[in-house]
Length: 463
View (cartoon, helix red, strand yellow):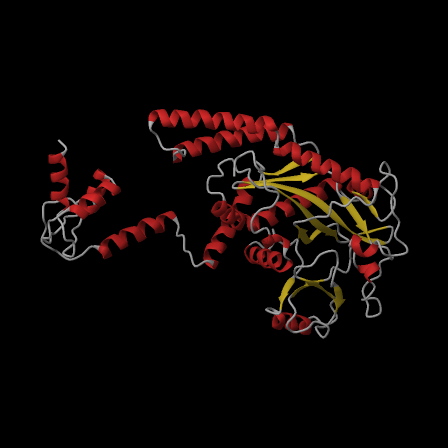
């Protein structure tokens, strides 16, 4: 892919979008950072953790749990329960502790749909859209009991479910998004402030919870993307608009319910149309997808190819050139995106919290390496292990010759020329090659040619 080409999804974003993967990744982070990752309800993935959940239910009898299929959306297959009798043994689903004391608006339970733009994963770049949706249930909320566990219009806030209720009110006025069962985020912030809360602190908590969630999976996104796009030095080939579903409890603590990698862009109401049109327009503005950018890239690449052909250099940029191009691209992106972000606010990088977020990313990377069977020791351990391996690999004393080793000859002649000369060599005697560059010697009696003599012969024949 070229820098001016974009794909609207990241490889392996299912590590967030699938409920079982999201629960597993956040549970792993919470074991290491309990206070920082306390914004996600306790979650069990069935059938793998069925026994653990049974023990939890037996220990805390009377608690309510919510069961969700691991890969469905729009409220399909969701129900509340206090036992596992209704959950088939082989069904793949997630079970979460139900938050029974939610924050209410006009006596109704609701959740928040926060739109997040991820535009780069190495390094991570996250933008949060100013406006979003507050989706209200249609039945007055009552604490869960055995009699009302099946009342989805009371306990579930999914728009796809509540729009079928006879009590659902559509908002037909885009300029007044403070009525009906789908309202604006701005209305929620004002409602919180008017009732003794602090909306500024609440928004800060939500923003940090979103970034921490993405930090937990950043190494996975980076690994998959780098395998697909190894020369993506502009970090701009993929972007994705995510829908974070946030629930507030009675203490105004935000809880992450799930992450949608394909949030709905249907515009059933005028307010929907206004919010989602602005969201898509500002996203395209940040992406800088223009014909001029394509022409600029084609012109720059043509000049670079001509220069390399004239100077007989490699067609692809060297490692140093790639690093320089990457730094230049990051500086250009910072300047451009901050000037054209529209209603987006950059949540990451964050100068005040970069060091803390990097701690989460590093731990997630170590966990990913461990799950793949890879061990990356600390720098001091690397030095010690290198010394030990060097001593252990040193062979016993052997008789030495005066020639160079094979690798040194390959380096001087080049692999292709070396292989050709080796094939034509008629020298069949065994030799002992002295590995001077490694500081030790190695017996290469199986080698049927004299590497040092091969180099001398080539120099003599070619002056």
